[in-house]
Length: 132
Image (cartoon, rainbow, N blue to C red; front, top):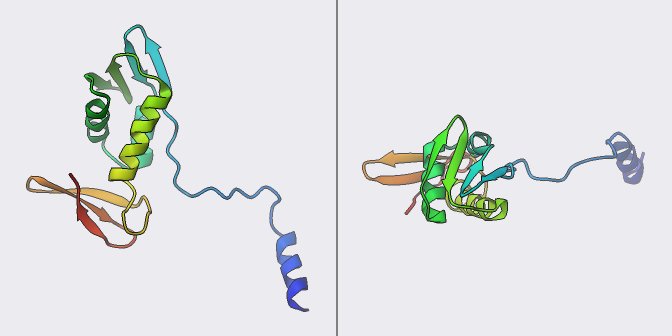
């Protein structure tokens, strides 16, 4: 068998519907507006996919959106009317700043607190750097 025959044989064993997405995908925020309050229904699922504590992500969202809010039973309630797009944009910014490794661009990171400083440590490449 030559190379082309082997290649065709290998391709024939593959499923037709192969996804080419990366292994890391953050679920889109499901937002429910009730008057002047906005609830992120799947906040717990989002934090689980990011491998971050809900308190940490909630503090960031509240600070970036410039509002107050509360967290209960895997949901985050924000004071004010916010669209799903604006919430998702802030979550994306959080992922870029505090989840994805600056060196290898993988999401396999952990937040470590040493004294008053917080560091990101990458489990994949071993990089370690401070965050603001």
